[in-house]
Image (tube, rainbow, N blue to C red):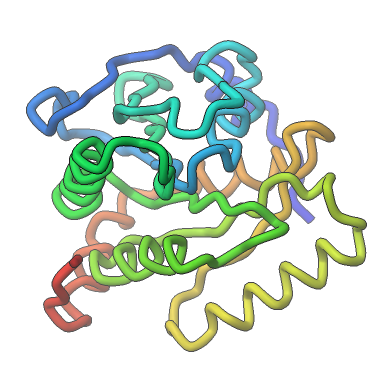
Length: 225
């Protein structure tokens, strides 16, 4: 059980939109520390960011999948940022646009030196789809620490949500990573403090960058494709 930390809460409450990037050249300067939110279209990334920061309109939400078509950066302070990656797996988006999203996200995950970790959001009713697995593999290849956040847990009974969490942890075990799986519901405000604590652990730990480099060098030089 995580203890609520008011100082951590205040850090996220001061979040402001920084920039929306559609190409690598538009990314803000690569210094300090960032954590990214990634997940399938309509999995609830924007809602999660709004709940974690306590700012309802910070990240634009929509019932239309694929609404986020750029990488959105949010400033917490001079050194720390949150990043909302475009949702993946939206079949109705034009193929050219989907390819562009893929290249941009791959560039971000692979080359962004300030990136400390990734919150992989997955629908608790359908976790670890093939596309989810691909993103897990990208993180592993890049040496990026990640945790899985199971969203929309209010759609499941508590016992079923706990079962899904356990099953997801078991499916991750062969990867050899120490990722955790968190239960989250924006509707019921469940799991907010837990997610904040993990994000802050990444943002505030200067050893994370060196750890990322060591993790990457310990793995084969994998092709992200």
